[in-house]
Length: 458
Ligand code: ATP
Ligand code: MG
Image (cartoon, rainbow, N blue to C red; front, side, top):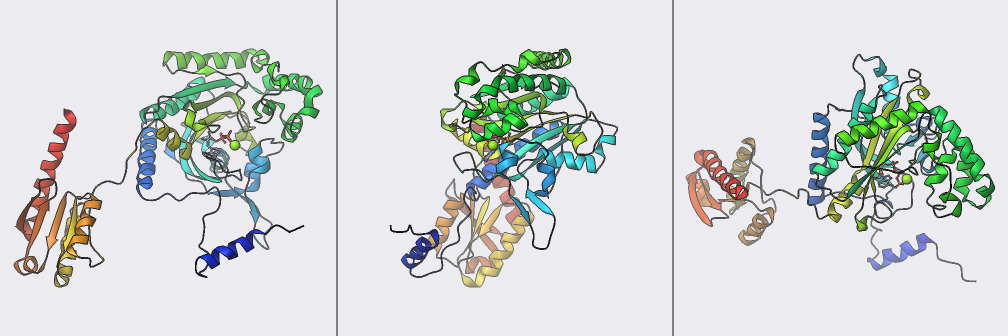
């Protein structure tokens, strides 16, 4: 038998093809670089998210991108994320096991308890966060190993109003970005008592089927049988159809809590569907759980853009007051960008320059650089050629930068302390004394923007 070539050999061949040069470095699988006009999309998205949180009085919280492993790996957790997807490491000579955060909630709750924020006079403590999360998953469209989440948490008050506030926030953000094809799915997992009853019902019901279910479900059967309902492998197994429903096991208090959540959403005219199979991927949820799903066909299996729920046990698990509860959600920023694109919604691209300084004589370079610097000092967005290119090449750069003005500086401009300003849209140019450049640019660009607004108003 011919042994298969191992990866390193294959790489060695590529080196040869590239003329024996060193193998190019490549980004790890499931990761992505954001640059060029994409970075402006990201900034536009982040700006919208921050503005909404500002309106809703949620403060930003920044927690580390790794935590002690125990923060994420909690006893008896049956979720895939905790069991197979975590990047966990120990440095040499260290006993401390650290884990790159796979999600945001645990770190926020750790910080809430560690900093005794539960003692604040004003609760809930309301936070938002955004940043990279790491999960060892099989990369696919909308599923990455390093991806970014934006999330909110409201900790310390258990009230249907808080649940609904977070859902309204989520829904309003997605709507304001322009997403139309979305659906809010809602369910309740009830309190501990309700879930314990439901859990025994599920154990009894699934007992004859466990052997036929996938290996993850066998583990779930022992640790958290609710999660069997969320299994992507056994989704179509016969036994799923007649499984007991959470709604039949809710005690009165849990039912009443959920009813209030639904009534408030009705009042605020937030459309939602109750989905009694919705159990969510994490084990800590109680009461309200929800997802916002994009119905656009391009999303494929990765159609859940945002997900969250209430957690009754997490704060006390981390050493906070007994019985204190929180709620939160997170959205996948890459997935959201895919959903926006699928609906044809365009976010910002790279904005045009106000002015591009063209240097037409090496002797005038320092003078041109001074002009550039003073324009910037007045807040104009501008740039200049640093490659000592020909007139023609510099003019192409002006085009690419979409600059409104080209400021030409050559030997005569240097000698006469002038600049030549070319208005690209009007195809006019004027010679200006350098002292008058700023007021001139002010007036030209102001006129431009008036003109622009008039057109917008039409
Ligand atoms: P899924 O069922 O798709 O694996 P999940 O239940 O693991 O999702 P959560 O932990 O609730 O997801 O994370 C909230 C959101 O984060 C998801 O709805 C999704 O938008 C995003 N997300 C989760 N995992 C990934 C990933 N690997 N790549 C990109 N986005 C992700
Ligand atoms: Mg997952």
